[in-house]
Length: 540
Image (tube, rainbow, N blue to C red):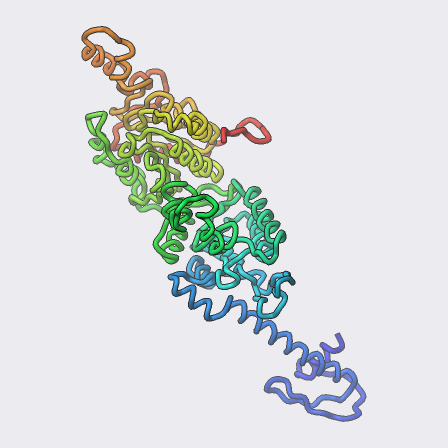
């Protein structure tokens, strides 16, 4: 305190310090020159001032080095690949001047293989972490820096990510990860693997509590990508390119690992900002509501003729969805995978909703393994984050065949049934045409605690199609055409379900938007709780 007081006094901030003068010296501090007593306290003042300036300079140098990442040469190499740097991505994703960075001075702790040398130390290591805002709403973000050791994960790197994930859980805010990494940092050995496990644990603990969104913006592998792919053929005897094995097209159309693909960083980040607007910040928040300029009681006359008179003729379920939702805005999830089912986010009277719909244009809308898993994961996400679910049904059943049976269609199909059954958010279902067999039960039927279930006049709720049913019921008998007409009269219409209370009303298609908006308003106060359990045992 004495040294601090003297330093302040020498700058004219504190006056009246009484000391015995032995000699007088002039000390320059910045642009101010003052005369102060030469004492032992003054010698402490000089030491303090020099030390203070040195620390400040070091801070500034470290900050500048952190902003440069792996250096200008590597930044230029990143740009030549058509990629933004980690910091450029963060700045584009978040609102201007909203980013607050954490752990900018963190460095790796590895002392093996020359890693202890200064040239291998980068402030912030290979990831940028912090918090910011998207359209004014809080979000935590980490962005891996490929210019520093290829974005590889070190112990310090993992520690930074874990810290912001813990903070996000504490305050109830989403986490966004911008991934661009070659995998574990080999020089650190098991510490890197431990870092991955620490992150995985937090992924699990945060699941269903806060939204977690990952953007794969470069290589993302369990090791250094350049070392993996040249050896692929020798391990598996397969000739495969990097794109075929793990590229965007593969994972958005074949494996279903990724949900959307974009042409470049900018398009991806702007779409992520749009997607973020549909989500609540945590499972404690309701679905977001924004002002809507699309009337909630708007009629949609085009829907009255959208379903073909021939039951075997296809139509596009997306046409129905776009016509009903606010301002025709529908953010589809996994549009190129399992196309026989459509899932995505929209708004109804300003309120975020999740939409699930069979797609008659693809495999007649039949449910199969991939579509069941796709739909189940989406329904569970909506239920976890209090987002109402609207389901459009036109399903002739589950897809038959040995491939489906061998793949476990019964087990996978049960996932979708399980997801709809356990969901406690508002559930509104509209049967537009076919609702056959077990698939009718699965698609958010009244029997699975559907809150409001509607049928259009074109709806057919039955065990199976008329032709197949007649061949079984009237096998070997004459006049099967007459029998088929009789079956259609009795079962191929919405009345059998309506008279039994399995649908709440048969509505004109044009009124669908109006009815849904009214129901969502009523169901906004819905409270439903499942029986206590440690956890359910969904058929994985």
